[in-house]
Amino acid sequence: MNRKSELLSIGEMAKFTGVGIQALRYYERKNILKPAYTDPDSGYRYYSLEQANSVDVISACVELNIPLKELTDLFDTDDHALLEEFFVRNRKAAEKKLKSVNTMMALADKALKRMEINKLYEIERVYKMEFPEKFYYIKSCGQSIKNFNRMKFLVEFAEEVKANLMQYIDQVDSESFVLMEYGFLCKLSPVGTEYFTFAEIPRSLADENTLIIPHGTYFFRKNKIGKIQNAEVSARAQKQPFCEHFMLIEVEEVMSGKTKINVPIYDLRLVCSRCRKCRLFDIFNNCAAG
Image (cartoon, rainbow, N blue to C red; front, side):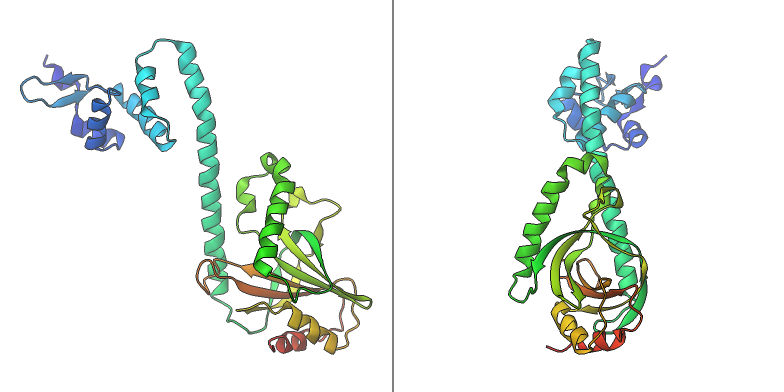
């Protein structure tokens, strides 16, 4: 029987494995995967079906950026301990790669959902919407953020949050942290005003020190610049009977579909779940001034 009839041509091997002909030739030049048979007259290359498994290994290693030199040694050895060590080590590399892929998929899903929702709302108009429960890691900024370099402060705060949560990173899927909310919030009460910066965290990392924003339907508006201090002034001008549940939250929202990808819009929300006498709409209409 003609040996070639039992083998796959290089084109057939490329089609069967999904790896290009040029890649198969490259693997041959690097002495990683030699054809099972090369016709001495035509120079055509032929591969055995079993070699498709080796192509799968090579392709996986290329995806994981594993040096091809390792494969040359791997395919030439009959040392099972070496083979076991190779696959154990690179399974960990595959897990890390998978985590990165899952994070990117979660980022894409959240960004697309955010942009789809934002299509429904115009800039600087007041709306009401149902918001889910949120868990915020917070840090006090004092009674004003008027002279704050917002971006610098938020970056420093984000680094602080990351350092504090690093010990828990293995307990939470990395995709839980993508496109989490961050920004500033303002608590108003009869005794005074206090501002905080915040970063959203997963529910599983919440503790007694976490600020929980309850699920509810709240007024909100989207602005091109931060308006939280204007909203505070407006709220106080209404002479409201403030309670501890009266808060202004301003989320710096990127990938909104309203501006360039790295330019935020400011989603200003008024959370007042238990105070029933507030003139909320007036507060939000008046906060555009300045």
